[in-house]
Amino acid sequence: MIMRRVSAGLRRQDWMAIGIELLIVVVGVFAGTWVANWNEARVERENTIRLLDQFKSEIRYQVAQYEFLRTYMATTGNYAKVALAGWERRPQVSDNEFVISAYQASQVAGAAINTQNWASIFGSTQVQNIRDPVLRGRLIRLLSLDSSVIDYHQVQSDYRQHVRQVIPDDVQSAIRERCGDRFKADGSSAPFLPPTCDLVLPASRARATAAALRAHPSLVNDLNWHRSLVATMLDQYRNYATNLNALGKAIDESRQRR
Image 1 (cartoon, rainbow, N blue to C red):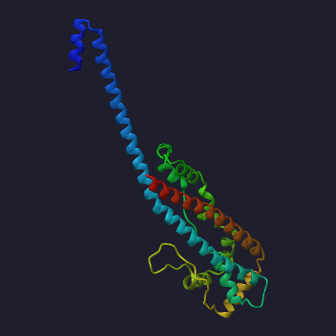
Image 2 (image 1 turned 90 degrees about the vertical axis):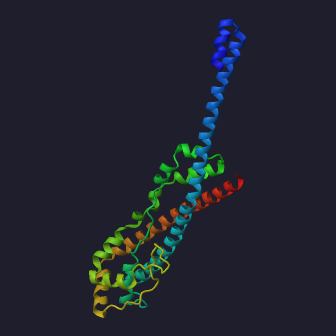
Image 3 (image 1 turned 45 degrees about the horizontal axis):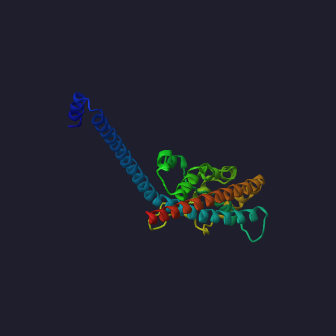
């Protein structure tokens, strides 16, 4: 219809009419493109919001992981204190307690976290779709954290390797079977370590293993270094959990303002 009127205008040489008709075409194309782009941006923003809402469950899981890890490593820390007292030959620590505690102190747990995976999901385009500056800043801060400092492998120390080279395999197996990682009846995937162990090793076996451990005094330094690594990892994880909680709060507050 417009092109027919333009053709008619050309035949009449009605340049004003032609100009108006062409202006209508240009404006129509521009408006159509703008609406299409606006709608596409709106869909992308809604997809980003849905991703953030789904991310809340991951936040809850990771914060729970921190609480589990903190409890688990506190238990191994208590065993480490008993083991160090055993190396010092304190009379209140029997050979049986010393051997068990030396092994239990080497138990570790951790979380396999890779913020790069999340960064690939919340790429630069997704982040730009977040209009809330506080929420956007919280997400960027979390994605920029170095997750390698809280990785499980950070506490795979020399002590864990060396003490298990000294303690005989049958003794290690007995400790694991009686007092190793346990799982709650609720089906939780996170294990817990019993805070005490009522295993009683044969007296001769406990005495011989204790003597073997004391024959390697360097294990004391290894254990001190191991505890330092654990403390560092927990500090980093606490910072990570703090940022997770802050992001979760920002998501909730942003949802309330929508």
